[in-house]
View 1: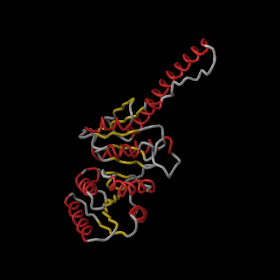
View 2: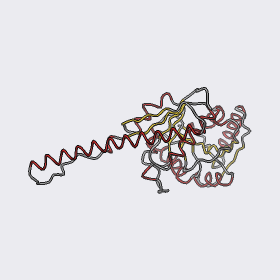
View 3: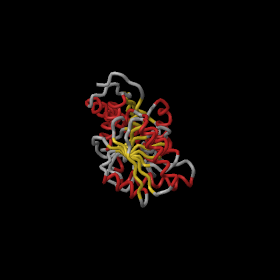
View 4: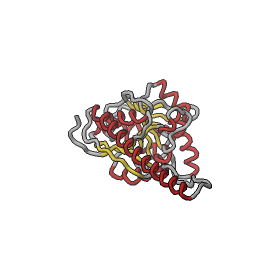
Length: 287
């Protein structure tokens, strides 16, 4: 059981099958770091049923009655959505507590999910989300509708849970020489979440700059207690890294996320999306 909290983890849960994985990964993170877990279920007010004029050309008395019925239906829908949200949070909390984690807080919030992340992430060390949401459970070619919005908006590391939890022992850091990949190396070297895990740093494409970057990364990780290995891969990043994940039995991928500039977003962003779409392990994204 965790007895002392020294940080905060925000986990976003919905009604998708990925929510269980989010909870199990959140429990794993909390066990290793002692952070407090705060669960959010967000009800987007923009997705409530529209109050359109469905009365047509019927007489005024019937029209008034119909509008009253529609208003009642909206109220019932709102109450059901809140009840469902509370049930999802209660189940998620019970699942995490069953993993031996105390200090689990639940919050039901009416807001846009990205606005919620931006408003609440300031005190958090990490955000945990599922790779896909309710509408994308069985669509392997698309990520959740809010996934990219959350990753681009958040300034904290985002842990993207895959479909099912599995023990994490081996970590791959994707190094491209950019600022976010340097942050990823430093994060793995310093954060207790990665203590005792095997680490590989890999880059795609051979160059003197990359070779020096890999050497520096290895030194940084060694200073943090990791005897890291390095790899230089050929091919496209998403293909080469994906193959390495399979060959080396990697359990967790850490990489830089979408860039800020338009050009960097087109290059790095497309690689980020492709990696997460095809990767069968969870991913930590650094900004």
